[in-house]
Amino acid sequence: MSEQVRITVWNEYRHEQNNPKVAAVYPEGIHAAIAAPLREQGFEVRTATLDEPEHGLTEEVLAATDVLIWWGHMAHGDVRDEIVDRVQQRVLEGMGLVVLHSGHFSKIFKRLMGTSCDLKWRESDDRELLWVVAPEHPIAAGLDQFITIEHEEMYGEHFDVPPPEALVFISWFSGGEVFRSGCCYTRGAGKIFYFRPGHETLPTYHHADVQRVIANAARWAAPTTKLLRVFGNTPAHVKQG
Ligand code: ZN
Picture 1: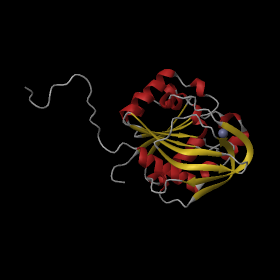
Picture 2 (picture 1 turned 90 degrees about the vertical axis):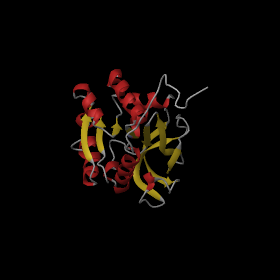
Picture 3 (picture 1 turned 30 degrees about the vertical axis):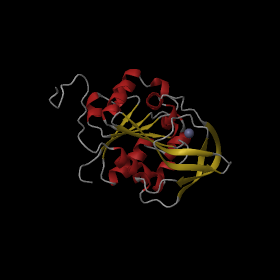
Picture 4 (picture 1 turned 180 degrees about the vertical axis):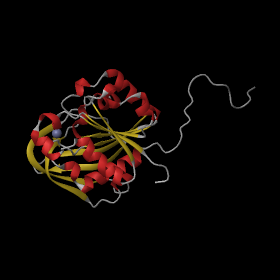
């Protein structure tokens, strides 16, 4: 990496503190499990959680964040609207956003998509195959034809999101459902990636290929240039008349 990508991993961090089954899988929190392999890859990584002041997402933190990774589930409603406004503004200015698993129902993802983001789900120990349907895409770099996750929660179509600008993965579940599991979007100057796996009671974020996808997504979503965005009343650039 020529310039180091600065990542903030945001986690609601409630299940781990309330449910011993989750704490057994992620003793230091899902954010710590996601952050550690990213640090090993050479990213500059900080973490932030819901119960910190301003949810850990101050103006200063967001200004120093190239890519924000988001995991939330039981407390989407506790995320303050002014912080959602702030994150949305940064995405429009070019900050990347990687939304994981149950983050499909987060305020920030629903705001950026403009749809319900609803889906089907089932906790019944399905097997999941994530088929790479865009092998040329940078988020699929280094992967085989598919990723196998032996135990995962099922998410099924229909997934009520806008048609993705690029679709990197389609999941198949042993119960028969399929799901668009890796969806790319742009909003303003910001790149957004939704990645499906990661139920809190299962060790999905310890899976090497899942970690690889998150790292690839962070590289892809990072702003590539210092953006010059000019709006509003403007003089003619060519002499007229
Ligand atoms: Zn889940």
